[in-house]
Amino acid sequence: MTAVADRSLGPELIRTESIGEADVLVVGLTSSDDGPAIAPADAFEDVLDTDTRETLLAALRAVGAKGKPEELTRVPAPAGLGVDSVLAVGLGALEKVDAEQIRKSAGAAGRALTGVGTAVTILSGLDLGAAAEGFYLGAYQFSEFKSGKSAPKPGDQPVQRVEFLVPDAGFGEETFFRAQAVAEAIATARDFVNTPPSHLYPAEFADRAAELAKAAGLLVEVIDEKGLAADGYGGILGVGKGSSRPPRLIRITYAGGDTKVGLIGKGITFDTGGISIKPAQGMENMTSDMGGAAAVIATVLLAARLSLPITVTATVPMAENMPSSTAQRPGDVLTQYGGTTVEVINTDAEGRLILADAIVRAGEDDPDYIIDVATLTGAQMVALGTRTPGVMGTDEFRDRVARISQAVGENGWAMPLPAELRADINSKIADLANVAPHRWGGMLSAALFLKEFVPEGVQWAHLDVAGPAYNTGGPFGYIGKGGTGVPVRTLISTLEDIAAE
Ligand code: BES
Ligand code: MN
Ligand code: ZN
View: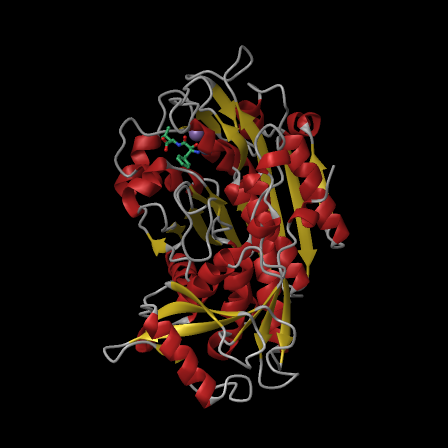
């Protein structure tokens, strides 16, 4: 078994005060009615003096650079600059440039700089943290399963080293440390999501997560199928029983303070739908149905790395949803951990069944906050599109998480839990049904199902990231094809916000 950490190694990130031995200089380019301008406009004079700036800008204008967001223009370097070429990356209009735009533009540069040894950038003069995150994430590639002729040639491999110009040696030390840690956590989450279901099944997922957590000195508990049966985890067992690869529940604790946060992530290593089987078209994308689990595992490790003064426990149910003669049937009744009975009307609404068990278990820790993350419903994408997480939960905390998610550029949006939808998940024979008899507000009725298992008085947020966790389209900004790592940044910033209370 290879450690996931080994695959996560992206470019080396360094702070520097000079151009040194770099091959490429990356500058920002803002747009305006008077034409493009190099950004930042007034920083690093000793690296890029006024004359060289003017020569460079003239060269960029000559080849048609406009400074539009994420536009990429590469020109030979002006004489004496000490690099071979300059890559200008568009930022759009100066007054609209925020941290997320810098992250996206740095990401576009990181993607474009394949085959490069060392790049050095002045984007750090705009926002060091955002530039570092963007470069690292843009340069991320997952090529573990590319062999022989299809393996990336040297010219297609990610930039090896990115240097960020800073005004003095001590500048931005903490910001840089955090940005690197966040970017690496996102890469860890992406690696998990990008690992195919042939190789990542519940036992293997739990092993890999446990290995990372133990290496970080965290408390780990893995419950196997026998333990799950002994303790009555009927939701996880019901979903997992159609597969020859048995389910798991893993718990990882970072104990850093009195305030307790429970994180829960949906870990369906593959979702065929079960007996309520999905259509073949696009089913391969259900390799991403453990994106919530990947994000919360990466986040608890990150909380430890950042030494947050709170206690964070990730409770992660893992199962493979398969159809077989041992699979649960539509119409079966299962007993969730804690005793609630559920009529399984549709075996494809499996996420809420494993999450319900995990939420009840997390509640036993007496947490102040519970955040669950799941690729839960296709309805999330119908409501909000593929890039906007739905945020539900208790009113105040839901709004807080959505606000934070907006601020970090993951753009989660608060959604209601309309009371009238609750009766639609009543069952004739059990305490609850796992689906409503209609498709209206599918993201919301899934959340209403989960709400039944959240302990009274706990602040709760539920993030549905069915679309945002996995990019099935082309690359954009700092996001490539496949796992995106969403919502790791929302989660870590929420934990930091709680820690700062
Ligand atoms: N994993 C899916 C949701 C999903 C769909 C995630 C597309 C990412 C992309 C989930 O388990 C599921 O199948 N949900 C059903 C629920 C329905 C049966 C009530 C859905 O959304 O169709
Ligand atoms: Mn499903
Ligand atoms: Zn699913």
